[in-house]
Image (cartoon, rainbow, N blue to C red; front, side, top):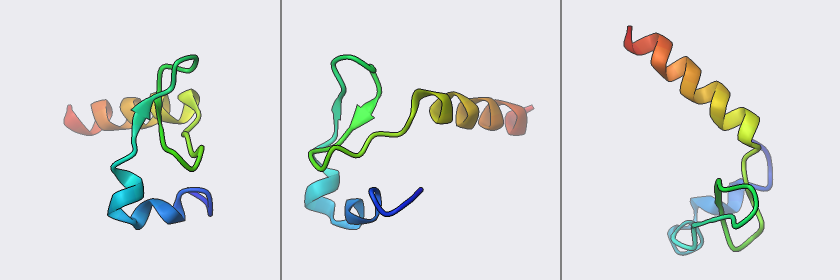
Length: 51
């Protein structure tokens, strides 16, 4: 997912997750946040695999 997400391997930083107030998606203290389009795409892929 890129170098912005690499630091999230640190459990303490990962634990800073919160819901972004505008985008309504997960974000972290280092300002990493996946694009809503990516999350939607991952959800669709997961749903297709479940069928």
